[in-house]
Image (cartoon, one colour):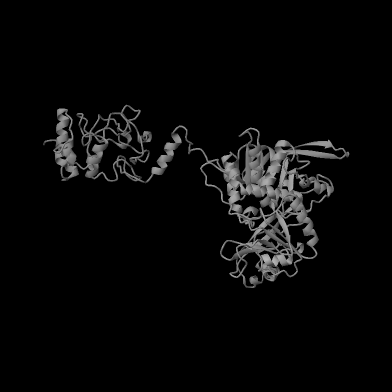
Length: 626
């Protein structure tokens, strides 16, 4: 009995596929003679379906023998004794179809495979194999291998296949492979390490608690006025990264100078200049310019006979500070705004310049974008604790007081029970309606009643409703923001005969601030009757939508709190503006930064807004609060 050669046995196993018998014969012949088969039209190997080469037995007799390599014996040759793109194994080198794929003779397990390049999308489940760019390799593979049914499935071993069974997965793990490559390349972040980008830094010179416009403004001016560029590390902590309940985004976006206090008038005048030149302050390289959509229609405040004298006095102060405001009689009012009913109106004041409304979201976005370009850190989380050191000392009035200094802030991560400690030198309390809670964490107000240590920050959340209605017969495009004698107010919203407005409730009518649900009965009973009286066209208005937001309401005198606390010496305030914090944020931020960097207010003296007034009982009352 004649013993069949291994090639003949393989031929029988593969069956009568066209060209297989001739290919095996040619390969066997070459192996016996020690010659190498080359590519050519008459070469039977070119007709061999390479998808079946894996079934051929090992033939190690000769350089051109077809060699079956197990999965554990394949390896990309770069750095392992073979040229880049070559597959190395235990057997002598082989050549398929004129040299498209070669083996050079080193054992390597599949766990040792490496990627040469992934652009050709050859995937072996551990790394993608790229054939070299050399002449006769890449071109030969395209011309000879693909026409012969390579398809999907030469180099990838799928789960469930036996060792040595391979298929080609072109799309399955490309993204994972790219991530692995990036993690091992020099100069790129390693994906194996946990992502800590959401965590605050362990050390920061200044921690700003509250990421609304007031907190962002303080951070901006600290970086803008610092002596050495990049010398101060600033961290902004905001618990609501969506700003869904932030006072900034829920405000009506108004700005005016018609206040009763010179300090508030000066703050609003500076803010008007800041907003007019916003792109000079907040421009970022390669970012589009900011468009605040400012509407300069002004404010129109109406006064009854009882309040007319106070309005005259306020306008006199406003003009002295540089505001462009004029007084109007009822007749002048009717001539300029014929849609208004002047019943019960004795006097009106009208802002002719630097007054109107703008998009608060645009200002918020512009500040955040600028701060990120300046290197300010942002963190989503909630401040839950201050670690302080204290020192007791005697005042000039022979009163023993305890001075505290915050040196560590604990930030609780969102959706987590863990916290991150941040060592710091200064804390800015710009937490808006919740700033009293932040102050209490530092021990402010936790002392005997009537003492400085026992004086609380008198700021609390007050809920305010904003209603939007449609009225086709309503006032035209020149309509200013109108504040009625009753306290109700309204302004136009866009170009589609829409208006928005509301009214601050009386003290006994204050709604529960536990949530932001809207009371629609409040509009029907407390707002709409006053609107319909003042503007008869509003008799037929239809409410479209409504929302509620928070005032950081200062129950003491409805004015802001700015500057350091007298006992917690490194906590600074920027809060308590009772509804006008948005429009005064640029000036307040600059004032707080000046106090920190220079030790005193430089441009606008805000000493009347210091915390001490609550202990001394000296009110800085602002009368024009809507």
